[in-house]
Amino acid sequence: MTVHYGLGDVILAGVAHNNPNYDPGWKGFFAALVVIAGGAIVLVGVIAGLIAWRT
Image (cartoon, rainbow, N blue to C red; front, side):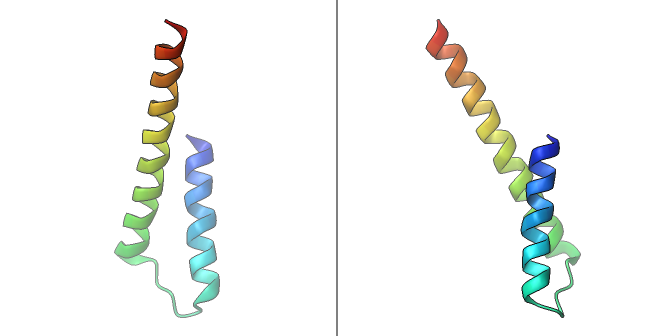
């Protein structure tokens, strides 16, 4: 989980760095949420794939 949170922070930091007037606010919060959820979905998919592959 730490990796996904870190990834979200890096992406948000990149966006904030490109725009000095960038205010994370709700948009930043939802962007982080999407990144974290996407990472979690991929992780679940990989685990399910490994289980299916081994059986």
